[in-house]
Length: 307
Image (tube, rainbow, N blue to C red; front, side, top):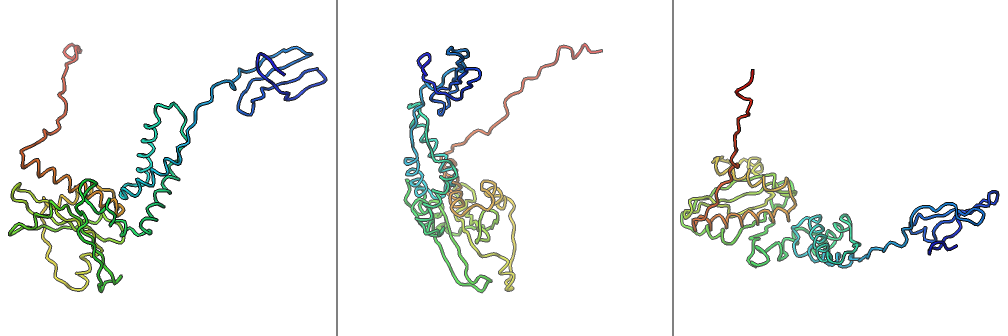
């Protein structure tokens, strides 16, 4: 049946009352329009048609997202998988912002699996193989110098029988070691490393040009001072509170027990921060400290007229 330019089909009929109930032929697409015909005359015209509303343009970007997820997961292995997905998703939205279309995307959970699987295939599931990739090993994409200084595995008499030590340091900061009569300060922190590592040894050297101790090495190691005490080695503990405070500051800028790749990324940011700090001191650049905005005090009008 056609009515007002639309086609209807019979939903049900009632011979006793000579009534036929019709619905729009496109009811499967969500159109709610319906009419009631009794004795050959339309007696009720139901909801408005929604089937003639323009169907939104849909663009399937799943293949595009998959390729971008795989590319980013390999180019920067230290970035957490959810962050990789968010960056790719934001980029896809900006790319298709002018299309005014509905995007069919890869949700976050499957995207995280794609990132993890891609990294696993590239490194055979070995995180120690991942740190040898250029994106992790080098200082940055624009600086091909090695931030990874050494990765050593050696036999020991401890419970595991094997110890591992991985050292990271910015090449510009490592040059401070060549100063004559250099003063070193070595301290360890435990919360910024993940298993199987026990602690991170931070080696700080005194830079006389700026009168400042600078962290030049970050060594993730499975060695622990408890092993020296266990075998009876005399340990002399010296403290220097101003320098020990750096460990707490460094740990506050890292999550608790992050993954190895996230730990490396954090040490890169920390080294870059000290590089900028040294340059600022040498060139007498300084930033004014943040102060609270001035407060305007007002005396209420009825302050002096209370009873």
